[in-house]
Amino acid sequence: MNNKETGKVIVIVAPSGAGKTTIARKLLADYPEIKFSTSATTRPAREGEKDGREYYFLSEEEFNRKVEKGDFLEWESYSGNKYGTLQSEVDKLVESGYFPLLDIEVKGALNVQRIYDSNLVSIFIKPPSLEVLEERLTNRGSETDETLSKRLKRAEMEMQHADDFDYSVVNDDLETAYAEVKEIIESFITD
Ligand SMILES: Nc1ncnc2c1ncn2[C@@H]1O[C@H](COP(=O)(O)OP(=O)(O)OP(=O)(O)O)[C@@H](O)[C@H]1O
Ligand SMILES: Nc1nc2c(ncn2[C@@H]2O[C@H](COP(=O)(O)O)[C@@H](O)[C@H]2O)c(=O)[nH]1
Image (cartoon, rainbow, N blue to C red; front, side):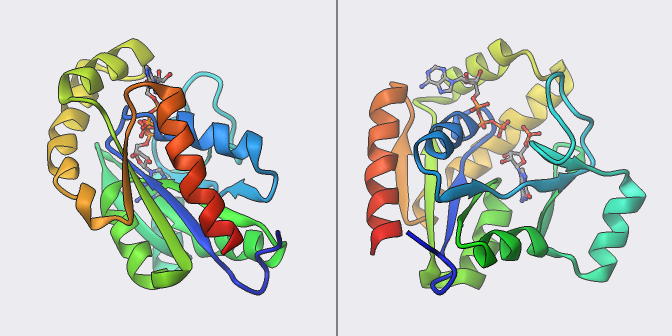
């Protein structure tokens, strides 16, 4: 499948810790025609993360310059840092015939959804409960007490937006959730 003419975009959205990156990675491994749209962020890199792969890691000043230049399709502040989708990143992938996959938070996803409209599919990944979400974030070991509590607080608001997206999938058992996501994606990219 080639996406150059159609310019379709895939958005996976979820509260932090629900498992969207885990599901996105499985999609990227199974579908060579789907490519990750690398976002920019002011958050420091986690262990094992590489600049230009997980994110473009920017200083606050570099990020703000890009905002002023209008380089972002969307951007948001999240848990004390800024995150944004670069229009050039999405365009580059479409130009090369790929389906860009955006792994972004709720407010940014709502904005991108408005822009791409019917050329976009959005899937909200739900954790089985907020307790499980906390457990997953804690086990991931990526958060301090402060960032964990900010993310959980934000998750409560984000969960209320589940119905604003095209589909919502509960990520309790990973393989079951992934099978549901695959079905949605296959129908979108072949349509
Ligand atoms: N179905 C599942 N059952 C148990 N653990 C899971 C499941 N899905 C994901 N996880 C684990 O939960 C943690 C959070 O998953 P992941 O990093 O994919 O979340 P995320 O939604 O991308 O978070 P963030 O928005 O912060 O990047 C990871 O350690 C992951 O291995
Ligand atoms: N609005 C946007 N949100 C983004 C973007 N890139 C990532 N994200 C989301 O931020 C949170 C936190 O991510 P983390 O890597 O620090 O755990 C998470 O929900 C991401 O999906 C973006 O470009 N725009």
